[in-house]
Image (tube, rainbow, N blue to C red; front, top):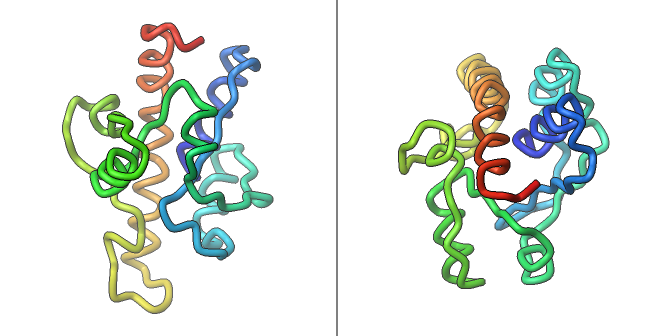
Length: 145
């Protein structure tokens, strides 16, 4: 979700309004985004308060020219279920085959928000936001604009 909204903002700033950006998860259990996530995005000028989670399906996969996974298990899921080899965000952003850990991956046993979780959320959102220009360049150089 964070990458979706950060990329949308960046595309808007670049005047690339004809590109459709969407996020989908492998689980997409109904839940509201964490308050801290929305606060950090808002501090970057991004309103994600109306985000609705979507589960990845064949229709979603077929509708897009590029799918980027945030985590290795997401990448494997898309390969196993849809037959697509897709890049990881970190492969594009920093040239490494590593995951960007979401809060549940970083803190699997946490039941409520802690200061460590909030610090992780802030760091992760800024990390994604700061690397979006590299993702944009990847899209541009692979003729997806």
